[in-house]
Length: 79
Ligand SMILES: [Zn+2]
Image (tube, rainbow, N blue to C red; front, top):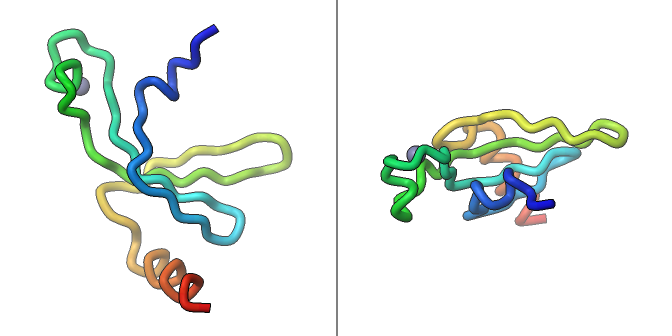
């Protein structure tokens, strides 16, 4: 079986922070006549993925990461 989600999302960037993974993704909405069907994908937008026990909860973040998250990732990288 094909995974619909993975074929409609392209990960541009990925950042891990604490128990979350932030991913910058370009999205294909699936509409036949949309610009994304011709390769012009939507976004990219940030999503956060949080692992809770054996589940992963995804959450829409937006066009850019919140300032405090960006800061934490930066500090993490410098460690
Ligand atoms: Zn579209």
